[in-house]
Image 1: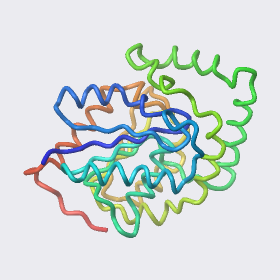
Image 2 (image 1 turned 30 degrees about the vertical axis):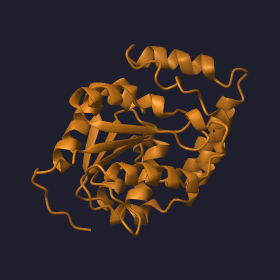
Image 3 (image 1 turned 60 degrees about the vertical axis):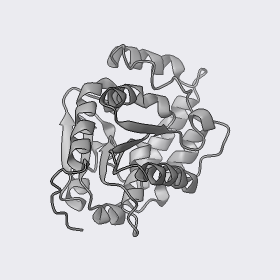
Amino acid sequence: MTVQVVLVHGIRTSATMWRAQIAHLAERGIDAHALDLPGHGTRMGEDFTIDGAFETIDAAVREAARRGPVVLAAHSMGGLVSCEYVGAPEAPPVAAFVAASCTAVPRGPGLATYRALARRFDSLPDRGMRLTEMVLARTLPEETRDDFGAGGYAFDAQDIALRSLSVLDLTRALRRISVPTWFINGQFDQLRVNERLFRRLVPHAELIVVPRTSHLVTAMRPRVFNALLDLAIATVSPGADQPERTC
């Protein structure tokens, strides 16, 4: 049995955001599956629901677990949903967890402000695409610049998805995570707001803050993120020494 990697995208984007990681893992001979959540990518015509997101992640994880230990890696909204999934009362078959750009509790004024800004951005004549493309051109390396939008942008699912996040009980779920876990954030990531809380609730987790990097850490610093995936894979590879974890 060999290690399997399941990759969960963030809001508005799709499985294509993981192209650099898929290519890296393919070079190593590691099986990887980047999924599309409801309302995103190849599933743009569907409605986003939080239950549908959990079902999609669970189906991918359980299918991968038939072939080997699973490393689940997720970004932003996908990371928040995956935190709740990994910390479920009945632990899913996840051997290690890499959570990128998602150390924020989506509740209260913070979530309301984020939704208001997203709606304002979406109300622009081109739904903010000109500004989005300008920012990506200035911040992302050429090798990953087109990956976030290659599967299309899920504008219509954005507010529904953000609103759905309020039902997550992350403080309870995080306490139940016992597998090897890494939180990785860019230095200038807006979702670092509850970084200390996440570390306190998952005391065995490691926190990595990448200097001079934004929320899009997976694409802005793909080699750094790929190195972290390699570490997670090495940690759970058959025959590797497994540190004891406490719930």
